[in-house]
Amino acid sequence: MGQRDGLTAGYGADRPRHRPCLPNAATPPIHSPPEIVVRLTFNFARDTVHVCDASVKALTGHSTPSLASLGWTDFFGDQFEPGEANLVPTRIATVHRDRLTGLSQAGPVDLTLPAQANTGDYAVGDWVLVDAHDQLVQRRLTRKTVLERRTQGGRVPQLAAANVDTLFIVTSCNADFNPARLERYLALANEAGTTPVILLTKADTAEDAEAYERQAAALQRELPVVILNPRTSDAATALAVWCGVGQTVALIGSSGVGKSTLVNTLAGPAQQSPQQTGGIREHDSKGRHTTTSRSLHAIAGGGWVIDTPGMRTLHVSDVASGIDMLFAEITELAPLCKFRDCTHVHEPGCAVQAALKSGTLDPERLARWRKLSDENQHNTPVQSGPRGARSPGGRGKRR
Image 1: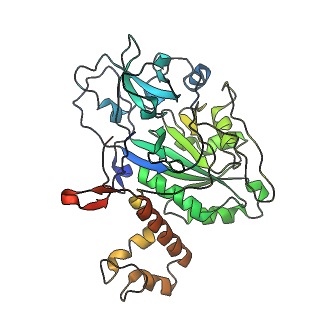
Image 2: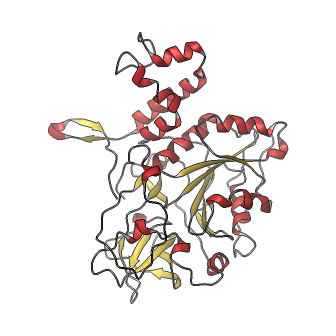
Image 3: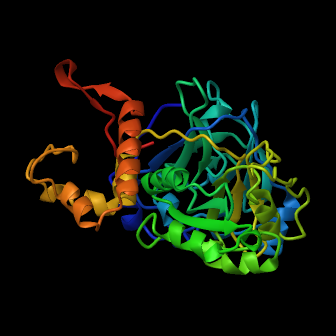
């Protein structure tokens, strides 16, 4: 799997809106739309995604869903090329070591890979064009977004999920709540162009849940924060705006915060294999890894939800624009500094230091911005430029 970098900040707001694309409509020339990449770095074994015909039926009311209900939009329809009108758009549903399965309008299907291809080139959520006669994958369509992970010591990121519209960042109103870790998730979501939403669980165990809500909302401008109980149907109602038909959401967060429970609530009682759930250790609020694989579930009221194993350690790379968006109050001050290469530490005429002294900038935010920026610069690969010059990996590459 080749590495790819994200586009400039703000692209997510400018990309095409999600409009259903009729599969039999005339197909315009391909415009090679871009895709945005975010890298997730955490530790667990390669995993699979599960979806069943019962889940498809729960979503659509029948076992032959429309393309729109599976997440198909004009973004993908515009990629059809001349001569591909007879190929079947299919969304990747499971990724195993040696095989793939997908979902099309005809329902679940076992896919055949072309020679020299391997399953590591595909992620759950991908759209591919398939020959209806032998179910042979002809090509993968360009992604809107893609979540990647780099395992400890690994050089090549591994695909986690593709074409995710909203990233639910789940944390608890207890010792698990960590602003610095939440900022890492937010930087990654921003870089990907996905919509980040923070979900606060276990509010019933906190003396002041609203205090957690205020802290979370202050991490980024216009950041949605939702307090919910993953076990109740009210949780599905609270998240319905992001879970409409054809929308795909993913859940990330530490173990024990209620991700699997929330997946079960969103999927409803019709799902064939509910996610296993577990408790937490009372002395440090750390959970056990009850989810050991990525999984794709149909949401009872429409859309799709992808669960991921819990993670506590998260390193960042290639997320410079995501960090700029996250720390907008610092990013907007930088151009006002006297020196263009100001480090915001000791230079005269530094607008950031002036805001710090006036009390309009939180010193803890500045410290976390500096730490995250330094880590990102250290972890971001460099590429050889003209005449051997080396520069940070360019953004805006297509994949």
